[in-house]
Image 1 (cartoon, one colour):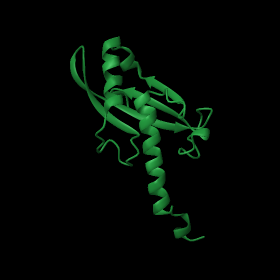
Image 2: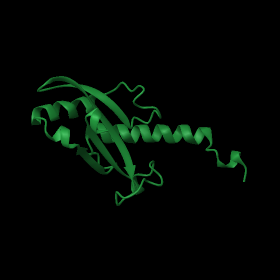
Image 3: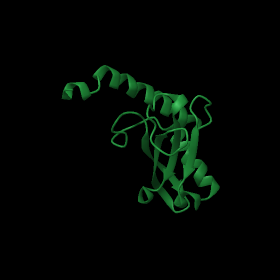
Length: 129
């Protein structure tokens, strides 16, 4: 087997990226309530210490996010950062979507297959990343 055989087909890679981007966007903008893409929404201990109002502002900012930059190096809309005002003032918060197997034990063998993938969207402070 040559190195060329191990390289993914660029067209397939682009198609998979587009599929993942659409699925991640649907999961993120529904905060996991879209029945097509099952998973969980999590907060780190630092986020849990914020007021319910600040938490809600953070989730709203994630749902509304539409600009992806260096925080999304694979262009799958699987991670990002948002600016939110909390009790102490404006802060930057990070979020990330990970794709797991159905038991949430390992990475999904095929993240583009909703029947074999569970997503986890985690919100955190950068210091908790």
